[in-house]
Image (tube, rainbow, N blue to C red; front, top):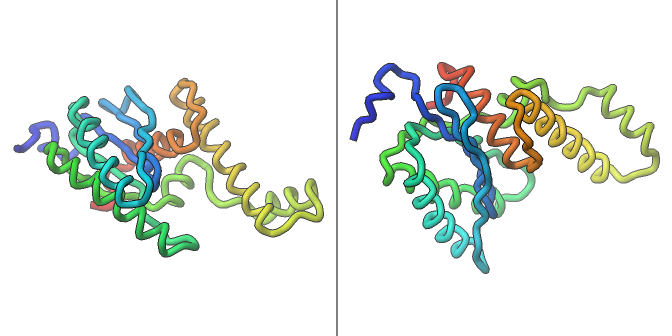
Length: 191
């Protein structure tokens, strides 16, 4: 099935997704306006059961909305090969259910790309130094955790203010940030 809204190259309805091994946070934009957002949690005693639950729940979710295309955050390897592999399984399930529902898969965006676009790039050396000055004697992992929290909160503040919506969940805020970047940079979406 061809969706006529995709013929001009820019979709009418975009669903941006921030997936994890435990949940799918989403934001749905219609004509560049944020219409829906939320989070779907996955259940299961192990990764494979969660992937099955993800497939069932996303299949039902995609049937609820008339979505033209989806964009996801690119999977990046941080520290754990197992986590990266588990995330790839979940993303495979949701991409498969999107195609079953006739939704085009626009592609993915690297996390730092959309984060930088909203002014939330990596902390500067001065910001990192100030964090250490304000909190002396902590472990390096503690500082890294705090840096991550600072950036999460920046994203929440940005999307809540820009869209004038009460978004408090950092995963949902990330999904909105991914979509915000995509609808303003459609020609740059990695297809």
